[in-house]
Length: 119
Image (cartoon, one colour):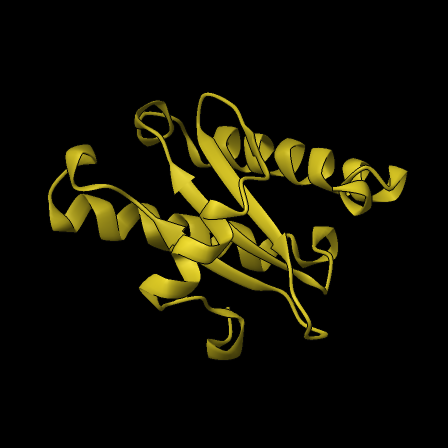
């Protein structure tokens, strides 16, 4: 994941989350919001309740790898915040990859139907 595709600021995280469009399952909650640029942005959040710093950093590395491997799923005009849930920590890489792909497909289906443009 390139630096220009990363959401880091607390203000940016809050703006995307407060927009209140999201999809979720047992492993993730993915918030998304349209942006004005021609590139997508990602922010990753792993809460302190999910483990020590070593475990949280390991989970973030796995998520960045999944994001890099599935670049064809993203809309270029969206910002995403990915929040890992407790069940996602116990899953294998293949299981969370499959979960991530299914959630991204749900987001893409919503935008292809035009549901998000009405709000």
